[in-house]
Length: 195
Image (tube, rainbow, N blue to C red):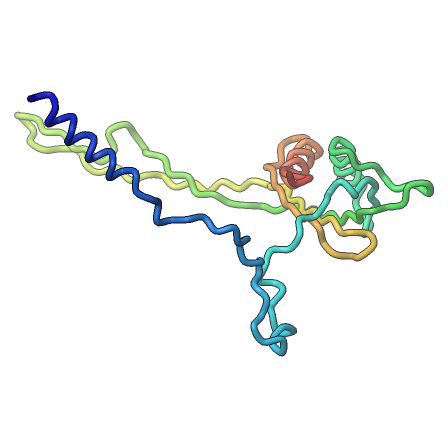
C-alpha cells in the first residue's frame, strides 16, 4: 500500500505533462527583408543606403594598373606585395580590372619620455642624528624625434571607377628606407582581399 501511493502520484504528474504544446509552428516564411512598402507611392522614397549591399566578389579582380604615377621604390614594393596576393600587372592580352592609387609621405613625429633622475627619487630619509633629510626628485623630460613612413593605398574598379578597397600603414624609418616602406605597404594591404 505504501508503494502504491507514490506511484499513483507519479503517474498523475506524468499525465499532466502530456498536454498539448500551446506554441505551434507555422509554415509561413519570414517576412521579406526589407518589407515592401504598404503604399506604392512611397516606394521610390526608400533609402537604399540603409540596407547592406551585396558583398563584392574580389575573385573577379586579376590584373591591375597604376591610376597615377608613383615613385620607383614605392612602385616596386607595392607591385611585389600585390603579386603575392595573386594580382598581376595588366597586359594587352589581360586588361586591367583594378586601378591602384598609392601615396607615400615621410613624417617627423615627437614623443615625450619621462626618466627618474635617481633611484630614490621622491623619498626622503630619516636619521637619528640628523633628522629628516633628502627631498623630492623631479623626473627628467626628454623629447625624442623620429621619422615615420606613411603609405595610403586605394584600389578602384577599372570599369566603374568605384573604390573597392583602401588601406593605410606606417612604419618607423630605420637606416634602410626601403625596409620601412615594405613594412608600411604590408600593413596597408593587411586584410586584402577581404574574406
